[in-house]
Image (cartoon, rainbow, N blue to C red; front, side, top):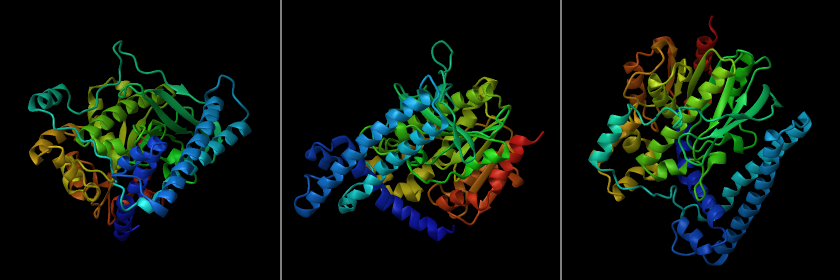
Length: 439
């Protein structure tokens, strides 16, 4: 967990995982049409010879795995959200089958190694920059891009909870509800609870971009073990990830593909989802609720913390934890190492964006106001060697929000290592537990 690891991880993500994911998503959407598939991976035509034969096998395998996963997921939904509760054994079996089929489907992307070097990392669809009048209207309408999640009648979406299933840290269940920020979309969240969940504080933990923990077998979520310390942990599924993935895209790709507008839409939708989950946690007995996350999840959480100041009290989180974050979105977009590695800035310029256009737009994506919670309720963990969400922007945000020294953890690590190492050095999480459980 040192900066050399982050350099390797960045290379693997940008040069291997994302191009493979692009080919995988193209196969799922266009597997029956070779010409469409070729265009979706940036090629003029489908390859000939041995590469083409191998690619056809990879596409066919991906489609078979997709169909197998659909059947397993349909059975899982019937078991977990059916009117009558199956036996624990049947629920465990349905979940084991679902996660195994999902993981097998996700791993199908490695069948496209033969075209990895030719496939782009992102299918760019950046819209032209908005005109000044449109931007002025957006800036005037809200302090951030996140609005309260009420419908026209002032009601929140109805949250449906699955049957609970025994897990390694206590009962687990899933929540689903109509997304207030994305028309026609369903928001999902996995809930980990202590054995005695009555009155337990809640931590709503938002993941990073491309992270789909509910679709990979054997993944480790160190925050789930916080149930052993009396917390309820809610792990939402971000817009365009997992069950919410858009056809033709891999998990999280639209946020990058649509440029600044993609991130604005994701932040707005996910922040509204978080407000619904805060309300659900309160109604489930939690007197204190924290929100937070890593990277993309942290960027969403800090915007939500600012927007919540204008919301009803029951929707306002009490505490915040930010890991690998920054308050400077312009620096992330133009200077961040992942943005540069995937060609984010070049894609913007090809779509007609100037640096001045981006400078006018990014205030919608930054936490310009004050958070709803006091500074002593904010925890931050930053890596001095973070080049993805550059360290200077995170430190500036911590200073602007007057995060106290005992709540600010600065480590000689990078973007990936500072978050992964929380399982070995959990002091930021320990501090959050203290804040949520103190008398």
